[in-house]
Length: 259
Image (cartoon, rainbow, N blue to C red; front, top):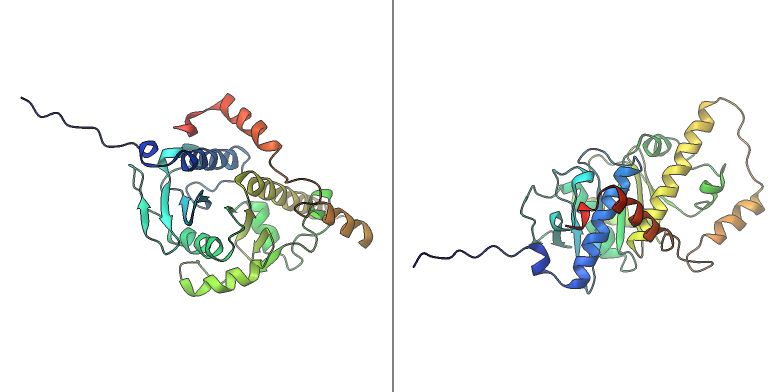
């Protein structure tokens, strides 16, 4: 009798339902970051803690465009860098992405998703001594509520991890000097909402400063009142209401991220 060769198990067959749902959401986030013009070819990273496995997180394969990422093409790794489950494409993991994201996932158990971007506007504002100026309602969300990490070169050394964590503190947004932005969320929906609004704030600032006209600032009382309204738990978890609508938009364009 001829030997019957069994097919290798698919990624979905090797993970829990909760992890698969997280993978679908994370792949969607990669696609949405690309859709909204915040990707950088194959660079940058978005990570998601595996539900029920706090020491493991999911990260992209360093060789795929954001628009190519699917639920099955993500790596599952341990905080210490050990690969727990690798996708069939197996391009490998970017070292800088691992260092940044593992440091925060390990130090901040409240953070389940991290989004890091390299947009022109985000890097431009990261190169300004003034940081994010409180000149728009979008920027006021982050007034007094983001960290700053000074540039130390390409983030490939574990020694930078504690400094990254200190720079972030208990904030959900980190401005990486000369580098870009990083958002943290309790959910993937929240992390995407934060990075989207932070990028918008930076773009508005670059546009306004580019006119050469004098900038108008709201009075201090207004700045603090608006910032307070965006503190988690004060009104609602931002991003949760928007997320299903974003998935509907993505599905109408291309639902292959679910594979």
